[in-house]
Amino acid sequence: MPYINKPRPYKHEWALEQARNEKPKRAKRAAARRSMDAKGINRAGKDIDHVVPLSKGGTNASGNLRLKSPSANRSFSRNSDHTVKRNTPKK
Image 1 (cartoon, rainbow, N blue to C red):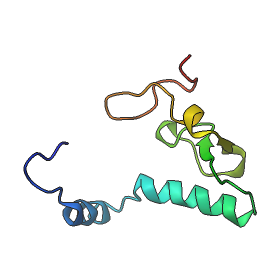
Image 2: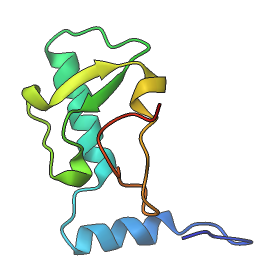
Image 3: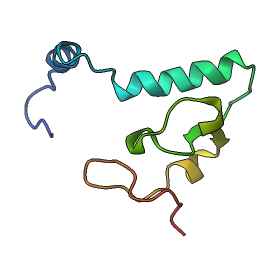
């Protein structure tokens, strides 16, 4: 939802997420980073990739996480709501 000529109401959006008892996607991605850091894995310059994307029902289980280069991890086809269309990179 674009906000043109007015600021985005972050506080209001956060309050709505809390009221619906949702955990933001950002928090799930941060949990994946923390789990890699806890294992002592050096992820400098790499992205954490979910084998099965969170938007497709994936979890932060260690078997579903891997390190990939940013260009490879961010090159998936996306739907209009920014979810992954398919789990194979563009060629």
